[in-house]
Amino acid sequence: MLDKNNRSHGTVPALQWCLMAVLWLACACHSPLWAQEQPNLRDHAYRHEVLERIDSLIESKYVLPDRAGEYAEGFRSRYASGAYDSYTDPGRFAEKVTADLIEITGDSHFYFRVIEASDLGESTESSLHHPVRLSQLGKRENLGFFRLEWLEGNVGYLDLRRFYPISESKEMVDAAMSFLSGANAIIIDVRENRGGAGESLPYICSHFLPYPTQLTSWYSRENDFLKEYWTSEEIAGDRRTDVPLFLLTSERTFSAAEMFAYDLQVRTRATLVGESTGGGAHSVDLYQIDDQFEIYIPTARAINPVTSGNWEGTGIVPDLVVPSEAAFDTAVHLARAAAESYGAAKESRLRVAVDRMQILLDDVETLYRAGLKGEAAAALDSVFQIGDQAGLINEFFVDVLSYNYFGESDEQILYAVLNKKVEFFPESPTAWEALADAYAANGRNALAVECYEKVLELDPENRNAAKWIERLTSGDGRGASGPEPSGLF
Image (cartoon, rainbow, N blue to C red; front, side, top):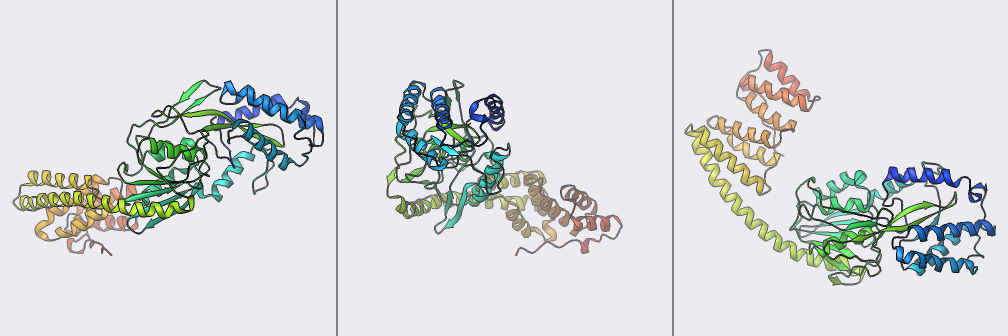
């Protein structure tokens, strides 16, 4: 789905869109409209051809075929009456046509505009025009990620102002979700979000909804096809299906931003705070009129599997209606209260997990010291399983745990704990290096070399691992001179 002010992708995939553009150029180049080297709106024939082309596209492409003819006729009567005869400036002409199309149809996704170069000044007739323009826009807008903050009370805040294709924005989404992963409540602000690439929404929603969950689908008039969207099975990080979630909306929230809010609201997954949204539930395709003008025409409509409808023309009414400028403070107040309750429940579950882990860890120590390695290993497996389910297990946690067992009497426990670290993080050079260091420090040179070689396999630039392999295989590897554990801070 496209935004209202800077629409650049329609529902047609990029490659298909390019092919369509080439075919349109090939067909249109023989038209008198294209034959003019410098088209001028003072030329009545030229202006009339532009308006006729818009009229024809509305009738043949508009998403609601039963209304398309009526809307085309309404537009036709306007230009036939001379409504645009006085417009000679391309920009003002485009603004007037856009305003009239929205008035006639009630559809704010219509957008007729002058083709303009990006800030790089590329030729608007070039095949690079749209790719360059979009690339520059994405850089200026940081792919839509405007602000990311950690607020007092363990509340995360994300100001998201446009959606870009997930092929471009996935790393940014993952980074933002990682930043918010420890929050006890999350606020996502789409008050200034005019839409963008709706195909990115399933992946973003997947961080807050279970898999599989069906999201809003898109029905295309031209293809007579309903394209379904579902949450993703694989995401980076953990799914946050229960964290309190708040969305800020305004009358400027439009198109794909509304789809995001609608999907989360109808699934009762988020609390919407702010103003009713703009009411744009159609998706557009881009059609080039000539070298001077292009138009976005709605060609597909949203259909939600829960409501069997959408928000076109009505917008989305928030759960808590407040003026846009008050939405942030209102949501922060609600989020802090929700975070406190959510955090207390999370701490209670964590306390139970830690108590269970400690009981099992005591058993691990007793069993290893008694020489019962099999039973000890099984108990240690349970420690790590419980810790992983509680969200405790990371490399730093295991490093700190291992410090308890650097004494000679607990050598076997040390190796067991560090081997669990390797098991959980097999692609981590530091996990293998910690195990190698422990073996080297206790004179187990052959095992140490094997682990250092794994370090080099994962991190060929690790000079320390290379030096230790050389030392340990030269006969100079003395247990007492093995690597010392790194300091924690």
